[in-house]
Image 1 (cartoon, rainbow, N blue to C red):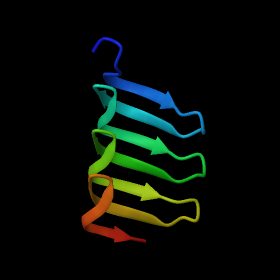
Image 2 (image 1 turned 135 degrees about the vertical axis):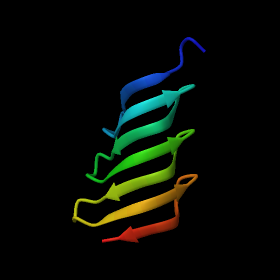
Image 3 (image 1 turned 120 degrees about the horizontal axis):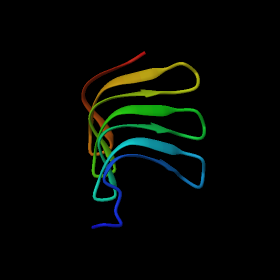
Length: 81
């Protein structure tokens, strides 16, 4: 337990992706932001390393999805623009 990420922190993956936010037992859990090295990003709620709850995903071309996620999948009420 002592060597696991817990609380607030930042992790830079080898491929350049970045997660910054809340951690619980070494997993993204709570509120956080994930920036993909290709330029897209997700800001919102996480549960056990998956997008879960309310969030917003944006892409380099300016498009965005704002709404609900369930276990890493866009699900429920949301909108694309």
